[in-house]
Image 1: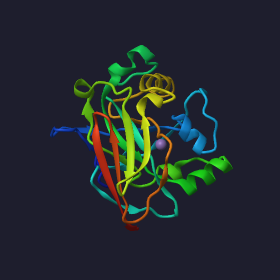
Image 2 (image 1 turned 180 degrees about the vertical axis):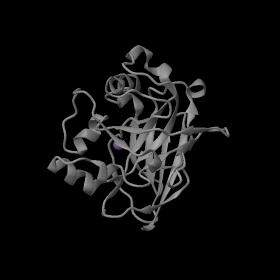
Image 3 (image 1 turned 135 degrees about the vertical axis):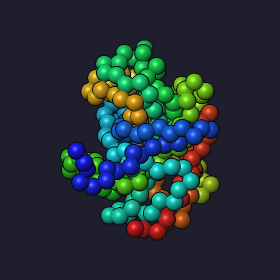
Image 4 (image 1 turned 90 degrees about the horizontal axis):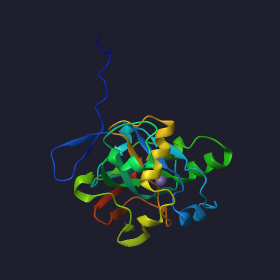
Length: 231
Ligand code: MN
């Protein structure tokens, strides 16, 4: 057997303070997981089961990169998020056992073409064009749970050019990481290298060329992204 063209490189993310890398398998994202953000998107927060969308693994971008302003949008938005990294796979994972499947945590920025997402949402179409575009998943260095534990509270903040835009606490998550992992694993068998972006708090807004966006989470440091010229 031989490939008719070279297979793509395995997307990876850095492990903080290590030469090791996390091979990224899939990126799951939770929608509307902070009440104030659900309200700013024109929806009532509720305890309906969480819903998910995905991004391709090769949408990952490291901290410190300049990302070209993406095509086909006039409303690129930032979304600060806690990211859980699955290290041990499983299906039908019990909530009480969920955290034993987490290798570590990172800071993420769920970049969103908001105009395309809202058009899709309102027309009942898939969200992919708004959410799953090239370079849409900024993921910072992963910190092992053996070092940082399992963050359940503490600040999650985002600034644009030094001005605070999102400022909330991880304790405000509607669905916690253990709940999300348990629920997700009923629908999909989780595998090592699956990333889960757990949702963004209120204060999402636009990024334009020249902006520098910094996301910080208590105990996890910060990540930085600069927006370059339109492709
Ligand atoms: Mn998001």
